[in-house]
Image (cartoon, rainbow, N blue to C red):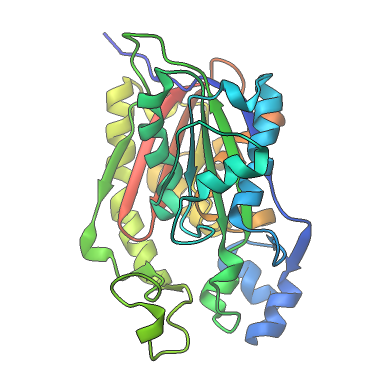
Length: 326
């Protein structure tokens, strides 16, 4: 007998991207490549950058405000606020606390999850425990423009800023939550990262001028992802008692337009079942999955009762997937 995929229970969805558009003409002037090279290699046409006075928490708060309105709830109805980000406002306190401040909320548990681009899926697993106390806000938000090297064509062509939020309804006592399959491969920690700014290499001790900038081995990430994604996707399907053919919509982390196409190829699913937002917004880190979910649902491409696979790859170490009923 087949089991049913866990019910996501999204009662409210919201998303936000800054107004400032950075097109491929702009990127080409920064790093001496052609716009055609960027489009051909990445599938990204443009991305959005937040202004200097708009930190990650401000974007997260805007997405959450939209999700609360969509859910017909007030902020005080929430049992917890979880922010998934790898570009926090500051090392501490958590960016989630600043989100509460932005919205004038208090006395609500608030914390961050850093799974880099897979953060939303890690956060989804964490949210289930808090959902037993009431509705939970799960937000993905990142401001990658603050850590990019504009001369590095491999990264600046890919990333943008944004936020997405989901308000998850309360989980009744005894009910099963959403099962997230997640694996970490620590041998790949050097594929993606910002080396300076932590306890391993405090910036005051860093002699390299770009130690605070994002670095990525793009080819290494693709090679790792090709081996990492299919097993977690297969396990997620097996635990949900479905096959890929049973799934109505696939929402992958939007690493780039090309990466989304690779994910579809690796799982042997048609692109007409796959959501794409990377062409308009680039890779928005932990925001990419909830932002894409909100846009898909708003456009009617995900509807009640649909089976949805959500899958993410993060930081060269994390591979996560789940199958949910919308």
